[in-house]
Length: 170
Ligand code: S3P
Image (tube, rainbow, N blue to C red; front, side):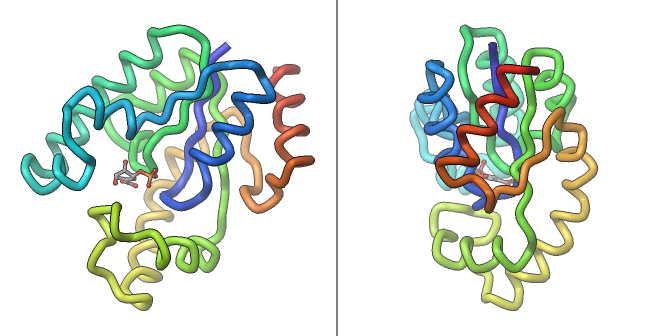
């Protein structure tokens, strides 16, 4: 079984992914961490040295590699579903889960965690709110192709338990 967690930056994909993997007895793979290891560079370094289009190509290749390996829970970067045929790769190879979170919650969470995220690193609170509103609207088209949609805020330990059951029944 392969489970892909998708959703906007800051929606908790890595945290939820680790917990869900433990519940399902599966290995956990963080696609961004996989990319960093594969390239020997951090994500901000790849953006700065090679630019976003090169990052998206690396991300696409990495996703295809991970999708072809053993069973796992895989958390993907917020933009991953929205480039190339990545959502197709995800849905052909496993169960996709969209962790949905509203703009206000994302703004508050990302204000505290923007340093390692090149797309938002220099934005003020106001700019961040505008950027998230706009890009979430665009990305929603791809996120909504997920097989399961869950409210990211409901994922306390009971919520994770429920999600694990839903995945097993899938
Ligand atoms: C990105 C999200 C990041 C990372 C990169 C680009 C995006 O991952 O892949 O900075 O386009 O939304 P997280 O969603 O884990 O922050």
